[in-house]
Amino acid sequence: MATDYDEVRSDVKETQDRSLEALKSASAPDARSVVTELEEADALDEGLTPGGEIVSEELIVQVVPQGADEFTCSSCFLVRHRSQLARESDGQSYCIECEG
Image (tube, rainbow, N blue to C red; front, top):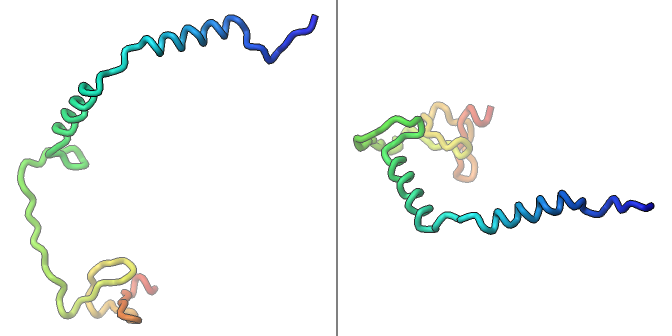
């Protein structure tokens, strides 16, 4: 008697059918409840830093403009003192560390 090994076994077929029926009958979450949950999670995340510390005060940073004796490296984009200038070409300035 020849056996077809490519045919799906009957017990596997029944399990697949039951699993598919269970998925179809399962209640999917309501779209509004998902949005509400996401909004609540976002509200909890506000005021947290990446490390998880709560910051309730506004951070103020004083921005100092680039000085006449400074340049911005075109490779690392750091503001450096003119003493660290390695080369200038086509209006681009490069520091010693990037050229080294």
